[in-house]
Amino acid sequence: MLHLQTFGELRLKDEAGRVVGYPAKALLTMAYLFTCKGHALTRQEVAAFLWSDAEPDQAGLNLRKLISRIRQIDDSDTAPLQITAASVALRAHRLTVDVQILDQPGRAMKGLKACSDLLQRDFAGNVRSASKAIDNWIAREQRTHRVKLRQILIETARSARCADDHRTVSGAALHLLEQDPTDEPIRAILRGLPGVAGPGVLPVKGETANNGTPAQILEQEPGPGSALPRLVLLPPTSQGGVAGLSLAAALIEDVTIELCALRNVSIVAPHTAEQIRRDSDKAAAIARHSISYLLDTRLSDEGLYAQLVYFPTDEIIWATRFPMTAATLPTQRRLIALNLSSSVVDQLARREQARLSLEANPQAYHAYLVGASLMGKLTLPHIRRARAAFKEALRYNHDFSPAFTGLARTYTSEWLVTAQGNGELLGLAEQNALKAIERDEGFAGGHRELGVTKLYLGDVDESVSALSHAEELSPHFADVIYSHADTLVHASRPKEALAKIQKAMSLNPISPDSYLWCAAGASYFLQQYDDAMAYVEAMKDKAPAYRIAAASCAMIGDRRRAQFYRQRAETLNPVFDLEKWLSVVPMKEQWQKDLYKEGLLKAGF
Image (cartoon, rainbow, N blue to C red; front, top):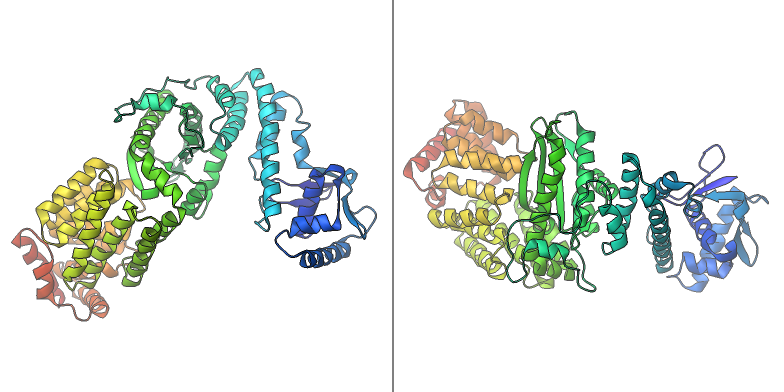
């Protein structure tokens, strides 16, 4: 007997568990034939399925080549495929298939767990989209599988007795709700589990204009055909190998179950959340799953740190730390769930129109993400490529506020990197920041870019005002806090600036170079030159900070290193003019310019 695995990767194994080396298309044919009545099709039908987008003659030729490869592997009377001149049939009596467990699930909870565990893996997961026929078949089979799991869950849920049973039931229910958040009978099963909030139990804070309280929004039925925003709770990572990671992960899974009381949000099941956490490109995985909100969690000696992020604009809605002591654990699930429900519902009221607009223009969103990823490096080629991407986003959606903020940032970044005092760049930055605010007054990003631009235009007080407003709108948005800190450096308030940039770095621990550059500047003006150099050394790309590094080294008497950084800076910008730069760089008080000039002169500029 052979065994055909169809969930996860398509594989054929012998009785000893060894993989039998069949071509991928042959395995796909076996899986397809197993779902067909009589387990047999004509050659033309098989060719049309495997290559539905090709011309019939070409599809037939492809099939003949595939059959030739199959016969070279096994052409015996016991081979899993029986191939004649007219047909292809599956010798179903010669093999078992994993999907059979859905029709013979076994007894009670063990059967439900086996079925649920099976469906946690994608059906035909390693099959790349090759034709519409294959895609449609996979989607149809997945629907059938969910129907069977739903039936098994409903029949079995009442027999749940212990904690392991409850976890089995919740895992199956969450998987089904992830695909169909409107399935009230399945939601009712979840609510019946011990400790899970029922409808109307989750209290929330705040009011929403014209739409009642957020609590009422929780209980509203989603409109017909409306796409629900999706929330994923990523399992925690551990900083420094702290003990208790499995406990923290179980806590987050319990919160996920409890949040299924929210009707107007689709909660991503824990299994999918685990896959996203492990993905090497999390941003792409989150975008692929159409996720609007994500809860990112990290466990350290200080407890469980959690931050809720609005993914389309990378805005941190809230961030806090929960103690993970044995005495406080029972209350943490409720506290996290309450914070999440309050924040998400308030965000729904604030951002629903923007979210729907975003999803209606996926090309704009994709172009914006490309631009945002390029802004991670402050080099002219990256800045200008990002600008092109943001402009492309606006061609798809003329009112996309984040794209205007991105454009504004490219102009201020170019002004900063080139150090030529080009007023035209700042004028363009201001125009785009104002356009972003005009299209979304409540989006902190627009006010942030206006504040940055006002800083470089020399209006430090206006800059501080705009960035203070941005931080009020989004008090946990790390990028906004960083920009506020940068402005405070130029406002001759380096002590406040350093405290604020350290807060931004705590919210965004894998800090971008711009944060470290700002911290280096604040440290320099506090005359903490060794600290300034430590921040520069932590930067992946030190090029933007060559001047502050040279000045810091010069001020501590390290002439060799000061000369090294000065030469690097001059290589990047051979026309740099110290006096011209000091005349345009905004610094509110003269002592600050004098201190900076002293360091640069000692470094040899």
